[in-house]
Image 1 (tube, rainbow, N blue to C red):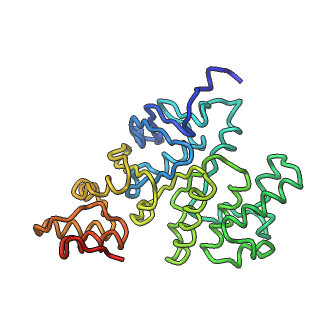
Image 2 (image 1 turned 30 degrees about the vertical axis):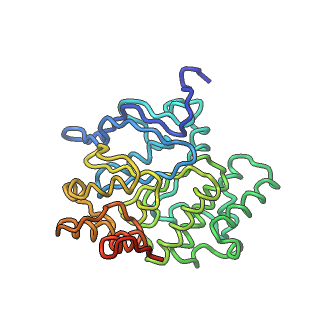
Image 3 (image 1 turned 90 degrees about the horizontal axis):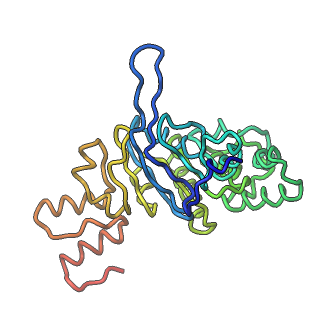
Length: 294
């Protein structure tokens, strides 16, 4: 391995002045990412929020070298993603889950599908068995190990797809709108799995989404618009920028929207309540100071 391909860092993913453009057969190239620099720290839960076409899925595909930057550099665990010698290590470090689980499920039995990736990595049989059992347990699908994937619900299929990535034992999982094709129950199942993966297993999670409630679960929220990062911070801080987010076609969680309306009406309430409980407590403090909401 060329030592120039490795950069010492404590971050799982680092982007330095990354640009990306799609070259059309005719006409001028389309600039999709514009001078993006950011770090993803080990063990963090990062949500990337933006409307369709803002570049967030393109950004996600740079995080495990599905796409390579037109300009700038992406490092995964210190490895330059352009390194021909280390691309497999990049894929082992950062796993990817897509919108449609049917595009990632390749076997006719759930446990065989989860075993597919480690088998192709040359993992010994006994170790594969351990990884499959553990992955299915983490996503709550152990009872379906011998079922046919095509008989599962959308949420269950997506959890199987996530288990297939977990079985590779990556340090980071990037999920590109994994709930976009699911009903509310399926969305909740998958979101709970993602949160558990980060909080209990310590896996670094990058969630690409356009759902405010999903973004609110993260420790850090990155907002994109027209190929650029326009906000980056804790969700409680970012979602207080109500007018700025409206200006790029985004809304805020219902709790913050309600508090913002009250503030516009002259009621002195904070704007950092993401949960219903926090919102109720904020309003109660205005109506009845020194009251605790249980």
